[in-house]
Image (tube, rainbow, N blue to C red):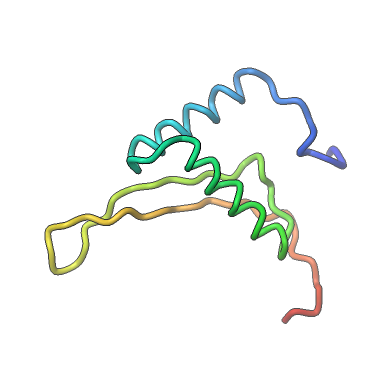
Length: 92
């Protein structure tokens, strides 16, 4: 296990797969891939303040969910964030 996994070199297949995932999510959400990447980066930044996460394996997905009691749909963001460790910082 590398001490700094963020700096490890990714192969072209992994980069292409991540780009394709972002394009598919952005297409469903009707927003640009850049916005989806900014959302993902912000989530990593905020959550990393409280726990050690595997930023290479974070997946976000935007779908549309039918609102109760009406025929309209609202966007819903799902995030799958693998947690490596939750340090004891005396918060709890």
